[in-house]
Image (tube, rainbow, N blue to C red; front, side, top):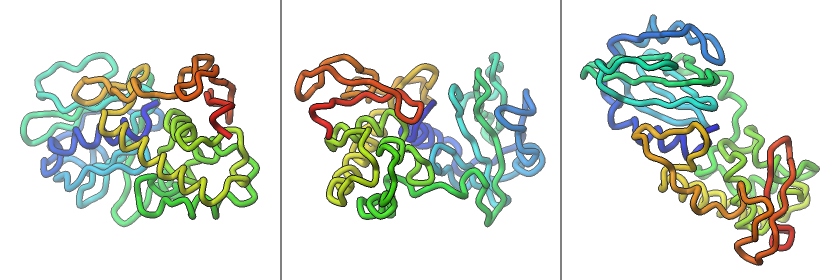
Length: 270
């Protein structure tokens, strides 16, 4: 599933082509993906000017004066801005026609994506309980330390809890914990304030590096320009179970933590 850097890469690529453009029509080739497609996409969005393209967690929001289209790529979704005359392929489920004869097209073979609606002045229920953005000023080591007190869950599961912080998925949690020399198995409540401050620094560094390099291309994810993400070439632990640690050369451990495959160095991470 695309994680925060992939979604932010998508937002940054789409924003120059969408901001200021008017949606003139919406074509739905399916009425539902993971959930039914919001009726406002065809009833309210056409005729509206896109004021801003934002990201919240792994969701993209196309803001207009009457509300926001809320898009999620699911496991295999992608978004492209292409000429309107290009024929739709299989799994091209949603088209938003723009006033320059181009179209924002959503492709989603597995249909785990979503196209929803957020009314003005409201927060969609899927966004209401989310934690802070990991690159925002609200996300600090002191915040994590305070929230973790009394928590027995492994710190990796704690980081991947979207009510704690959004968008730190499996890949980037594993990489940040390795960089901060913290075992993913350690209970969240047994990590000191100073180590949480270091962990936040590493989470920011890892995410910013991945965004700069276009994300980590895995399985079905494709960026809007069709290019691959190159952060995968720098992964220290994710997907490297049993291979030598880049620091100490000992074999990396691998196990399931919170039903997700985790890889770490039992020597370097404590």
